[in-house]
Length: 136
Image (cartoon, rainbow, N blue to C red; front, side):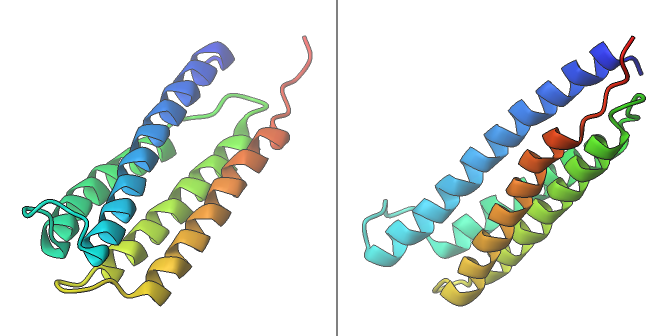
């Protein structure tokens, strides 16, 4: 894959990542609202768990697709760090999902998963410093 195509591909991946992050943040916010009783009658931990599960499956496929992309010269380290960060986010999402029980949220596990997710995002941000494109 040429550098230009790779950069375009990564930009599309980052846009999809932002959409996923928005969706999962909304789930976290909805969990908080359910606990406070500030929710719709149709909202429940069971439903959030179901929707969260479906999106974790989609995110898992997304991570696999990103990992399958072949990085051109100068982008190898960046690509490794990006995929590692995405896998860290995936692991944190699974921990968040496991924290959502039918009648409550395990706050300790949920908070730990949020911290893990933040660390994975920072790995992705730091990956941009690793781009070493050869001069022509």
